[in-house]
Image: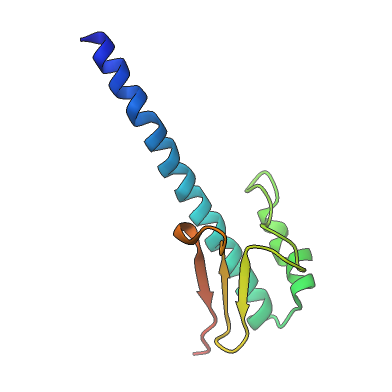
Length: 102
């Protein structure tokens, strides 16, 4: 009985860890998408300025830092729709922020 229980916990543990990692990644992508969208479309900053200024918030100890650089990375800026998607390399955790003028 004890071995079956330990074996069962061993089966669940990786699933819980994967779920938590996906949740953390989604949060990081969302925060970066909102900060980038705000910097680009509200403050009218360049991508370089956004990475130098807005995304400083993502540095440790809060997060592990911004994903990518101003030159390239797993993000997409759609200037026509005023949106930013971060995490384009991981579709399951990609998040899009859209600037809407009210």
